[in-house]
Image (cartoon, rainbow, N blue to C red; front, side, top):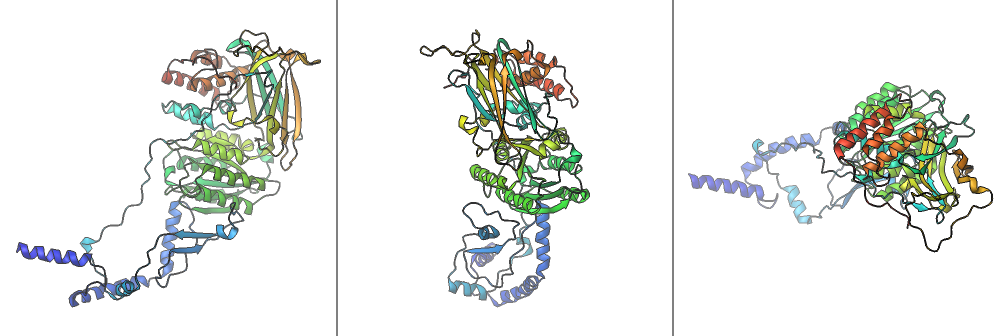
Length: 628
């Protein structure tokens, strides 16, 4: 009996392994197969529109609109690829490719050419039938698993101390980004010590409002002010604060807005601090819109799709419903999403209005165009069309800070990190004008220090915004932009001639600089260049920094800015501020008497306290970076 059972099982296994058409099947088996093939034929003749509807439902649940399906395939010829046409919006052919090549979406694969005799035998032979018990259930949908921490930050070193007699000029592009501060705040609140490269001092400083003087009209888009006072950490040095304040355009007078929400709906966006927070943030912005505004929604995962075509801003429920239906799943094809977003923005372009793409992502691009340089080139090419790019970072674990910040820089936009609903309100509601409306482009600063007054200087932050001295007057060189109501603050630490606090050793063969003409009363000369929107030639503003204007004690705004700068340095290791530790930073910040309407300064004090408890006492490194 056992031998008979074994023989039967072996025979069944052998028949299941044989290729169709290789062995003649028994007559009884053919009869059984005939019944099943009738059912299969009926299924094959089912209306194709039902299958297409199912495909559309799947695309909607994935967060994007699928392209039109291919024509029905009537036969199965052996061919190496299948291709279908996808309708594109606008003309967005990347460098080296024609528009026809962009419009054609091609799915490639390695299909093996079968022997013609084998193909005929397979077509003629009956198909083997599996019993219900042998049919495996369909596999579950892919589950996104967060890998180990892969967050990316651009490597950089602090600006060195520079001898004014050797390098009197310091040139850099302004920066209005604030993402670094919010991202580091998230880490500290999570009990994590931030990596040093995540800390950018200028973004810490520019997170706060220092009450710089504002221009009286848009005819002069911003005003420049300076303050000179003893450095809080060493009275033998001075701190020079440069403040730029943009003209604040009231929300109700903003020109019409054409926004494209470009939303990452890949599997990595599934956690509560990513897509759910993103949807809540954009819902806040949606409620600020007017009838003259236009909103579109483009999403991308493994593919990119248009979820909401350009829609008037007063149809808010329709926009909110589209946001509410978004779900996360799949890989991340950011390159295709960016192309489609710019095409959509061009389609709804508003002349003399605000045209902007807002990219919301964790930056984890892993399919399609994944090379950072290629993505930056794509965005840089598109800014010439008058469409700016703002990037909003979300989430933890795989956040690509380096890419998000760089894309905003080359896209004539700004970068922020959204870690809470309060931050979303700050960026997208309270600062909506400065986030959306650009009032000055390519803003550059150049300081010429007087070697007769200044022995050494050091620019605090802006390491990735430094420019060559010849770039200052070159209008073809890109620089940062200022939005309506934006503030930009820069700090220089200065060591006066004759001070005992110099950090660079004396040179044997260099003569002491002497004052030239009547300039001995000037500490430095400040030059600033900017372009008005739509113009290609820059305007020049020039302001001397006089020694007579030095204050005996730093103002509250300068002391707040100094505290924030010292905090950033402490998080990077604490090597630049003459032993200033957590207690000194805390005392300085607590003694500031400024309006704190949104509780940001109180929160800053709590962050310093948290960092002190998590990191412990600072151990400043020996020495300080010096210029080559």
